[in-house]
Length: 179
Image 1 (cartoon, rainbow, N blue to C red):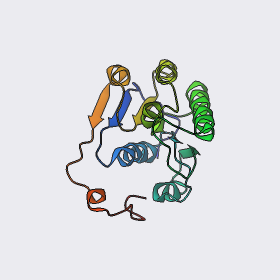
Image 2 (image 1 turned 45 degrees about the vertical axis):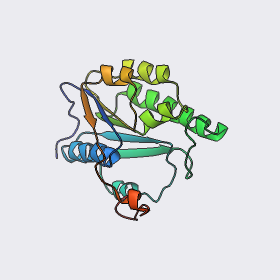
Image 3 (image 1 turned 90 degrees about the vertical axis):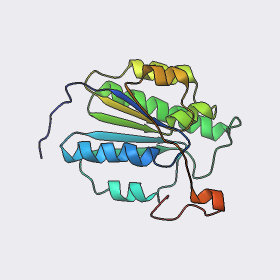
């Protein structure tokens, strides 16, 4: 596995929409990159449960670092708690550090788009973060309801469309599948 290589061109990617699979798609991209020797850093916003299956797996993947900045409870859209806002601010500061250190080739900011939509992080702070992206870093943002300003700045935008989902029939998240 090659190491210490750099991407020639790093883009900004967005996975958004109401459908399932945004985090999964971002993690798939990260796993592919790690498999080729690139260094990946995942920062999860508004997620604090250490028992997510993907995190349990990532602990065994070389070149793949991850951190969570959130509580294990849900955030109320438009009415985040002071703790939700504080943790999101720490996550944003950490994202700045990771980008500026230029030690990672792929940086995934999972649910940062939701953090903006829920009022936990100001949109302008995320746009300023995009300005910090080094040319060789692939930056991936996930979450529902991406602001047009983020879409406009991205090079790749994928809109996950929900057609049918078990939640519609009352089936909760299943361990190992959605959790």
